[in-house]
Image 1: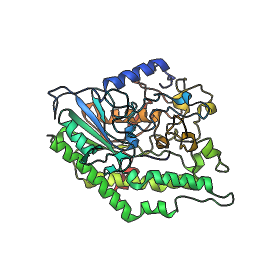
Image 2: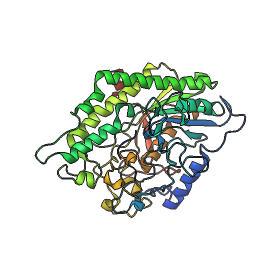
Image 3: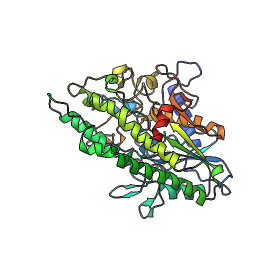
Image 4: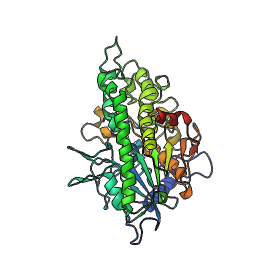
Length: 429
């Protein structure tokens, strides 16, 4: 989704040091890069398996530059540097400006696969050709670019695409507008009255039964386009797997936020300017409705080759402004390469406003997205879903909350368990 606005050494002897992790991560990215051309004979069922990601910013790699946050010195959290989103063939810029396809994005799981990231920050189910081109999951073909379904179709014809992962729908619910409204309401409320966003007309309009049904139908259409693209490229449904990925909770409930809601510290220090009641609503209403529409659409599309990667609680304990984690200056660590950084800092990027002005390295659209740690955590989850080429469904959570360890590839160690039935039931409503 598109809003406002290497890793620590493990406590176990088998983990990598900061420099070694950086080398291992770089090697993994290089070995799975989407830029490398496929072999001439590759195609449906032939050649190395490819994983392709489609959708919006929660899968494109948005905010993947930043490993935690610091208000003192951005270098402390700058894991990938200014070229973090460069995805063109020469590595000098973005193929589509603003898509923010980060090197840390989850498409590059390795494990014998190659990765292709076609997702785009800000994308909705349908292509937008306004001032900023945003490819939807459709067959749009114009001077600005192609829709993601058409791009998938063309890529799959010369690659052995074995798994397609989709995260979409958040922007169809106007995620960016909702976040902006909530922060504005928080900052402009008079001292004697809390102006909540969840009861604003502009916000409530996104969650009427009619709009929820409409978005569910749009998502089902997008998933149907994925299947059509693969069939057009010469695939039988049995030759590939569609993974539908839910959205994670980015903030804790109000009671779990480490900054008081009195005054402006919550936004100007923590970057999480939400009233407690609005944070509670985000987890109890907004997120379940959005994920429910996505899961319902996955059922509506009627494909037999669908798996689910449920990320709802994947960041619990490491969310923005959550108790138990903090900014680098708050937890007493030098930077993202310090031992303990992945365990002690947030996995979701701050909501930024004035800090993006001028020559700031920050972008407004990075706000409230999985950061470097969060992106690699999602990659670790997806690798487990891949399951050596026999994809499975599951709900993913942190493997050792409060004592997070790293995998050999330098990712937070996650646990893929049985699907959370409470989450899955959302698609039945």
